[in-house]
Structure formats: structure tokens, C-alpha cells
Image 1 (tube, rainbow, N blue to C red):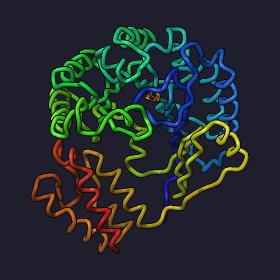
Image 2 (image 1 turned 30 degrees about the vertical axis):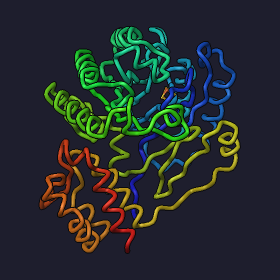
Image 3 (image 1 turned 60 degrees about the vertical axis):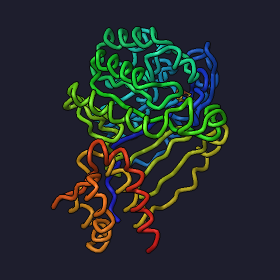
Image 4 (image 1 turned 90 degrees about the vertical axis):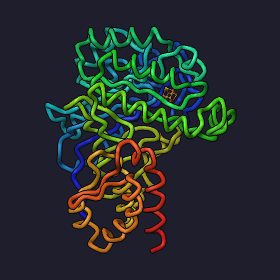
Length: 388
Ligand code: SF4
């Protein structure tokens, strides 16, 4: 199989003030008073992370997208952020018009810091708003309150970064249609260039997992959850956002280029604790604990080569998330006519049910119903190829 040369890098900054009640991400909790300037743990991590970058293979193309995800990357000091970018530049080169995104959380940075992040190269911000009701934020274990959201937006404006995205979560405990509509309206009023809307997933090992049963009160029922999705789709498209991916909306010209790499099943570098890289068909997941990650840098291992069938299923799983779907020509070239015939056969009933559109040149899910029931469709596709 042929794979594209990577030109994107994900960098994981795994520190958070506290752990939110629904979160099972690979993170390390540093408390309310610590950040990159006064935490030995963060200082050590940045050193190790840079070491990992220095040791990486360079496949020959400079980076066109870089995404600092977390955790809470805004807990880094400006000089740490700068240092990581410098090392990436030295190792791979960074294109002059590269998209450099940074996830930040309300209340975790000041004006000097955000201006410093911008001067160092950040040109896209993703702000973890989650909800616009302080009682909901508290119930989720978030460290911020609603006022922090507004002051953070003010700081982003003052920094001169125009491209900013807001994250919201639907399906939170005690969230009603009215509360959800209020969150969406307030988000729209802030004029972001992009919005990510995530449906709450209850992970078994989290406080929410121990406290709540999916679909049961105080969590919304499955019907209500579906309605929240439809409401977001209606409100946001009406406000001029393009629903370009199952969970993502953008004003024209502001789709997240980095995340598109994942949805197009292209190669990318990954750095940091818990990060995954995908290079030449090898998916490598780093350990999710600091000490083990530090050991792993010395002796990287556990590459799992992607088989042809896994690659096909991955391509379907991520590609059908996009509004434009998947080009049949690309699928045929990679996987042959018979695989495509099986896919189309499997999708036929969903086309009748108006969840899938099969066009001469592409297949795609409909918006919002196909997107909403994408899991049902993918389960069917996976089962079909498992039989073979
Ligand atoms: S801020 Fe994000 S990564 Fe950190 S604990 Fe909360 S949900 Fe998890």
C-alpha cells in the first residue's frame, strides 16, 4: 500500500488543573496553582517531549499543520511552547503558512501568555467552553465558570488571533433543550470561526461512569440526545456555519486543516504521552502514564502495521464523518471493484431510509439523520467485512 508523506504533527500536553468528571484522557493533574513556569513536572515533560521530537524520522516534507492538544496546552509557559515549536522546526521545518492550533481552557491564561503564544506561531485557538451555565460546569468538575469564558474570549480578541473555535458538549446531566439552545445562542453570539459539538460519552472508569447510566436520568434519553444534535445542526447552519464533519461546524474557509488529515486517513506524526502517530501505515500509541512514556522514548516500540482490510475500514470510519463523504474512485483504486460492490450492497438499505446518499462519484451520510445514526451504518459495514 502507498501512504502519503506526513506533513502534520499532533503534540499532546497532558496537564490539567483537575480531572473533569467525564474525562478519561491521558492526563496528569497538576492542581490549581501549577503551570509551566512553576511546575517541575511540566518542565521535565517538555524536555522529554523535545527529546522525542529530536529522535523522530523525518520523511521529507515540512509541517503544514500542528495541533497542540490536551490536557491543557495553555498551562505551558510561552517559552516552553516556543521551545517545542523550535524543535519541530529544526527536525522537520514548518511551512510559513502552517496552521498551528492550540487547545486552551478558560481561566488558564492571561494576556501576556496568549500574545506570547501568538508571537511564537499559534494562529488558531480552540477554547474548551463546554457549557454556558456555571451550575452545569460545576456538575462536570470543570475548573472554570461562565465569566471565565467571556474574559478568555476578550483576551483572544486582544491577542489578535482571529481564528478561534469553541467546544461545546451536549448530553450533560440535567441539560434540557432550553439550556442547550441557550448555550448554542451564546456561542453563536461570540462569532467564532468554528465550533465543535461533542456528545457526552460516559466512560466506565470516570466519576460519571460510576454515577450515571447512559440514557437514564439525569442524563438525557436517547431521543432527547438525538434532538439536541438536530437542534445544533439547525441553529448553526442557520447562523452560517457549514456542517462539514459529524461534530464540527465552520465558517467558510475555516475548517480545521489538521483534523481533516485524520478524517482523510492520512499520515501524521504524534508526540507526547498517550499520543498516537500514523506513519507509513504503522499506528503507534504511546504509553498513557508519564514514567512509562519517558521509558518508551528511550526504546520506542509497539508499532502495529495496518492490514489492507483495517485500512479500508479506517477509511470508511473516518471518511464518512465528512460532509462530502468518500470518493468512489479513491476507494476503487485502493481496494478494488469487489470491495466497493460489497460496500454499496451493504449501504443500499440505508439509502432507501435516507441515511446515505450513493452518487455516481461518491458515498456520503445525510445531514443530520445519516450523521446521527452513523454508528449503526458503520457497525453494519464492519460486520460485513468481518464475515470475509
Ligand atoms: S480539561 Fe479536558 S483533558 Fe483536562 S480533565 Fe477536563 S476534559 Fe480532560
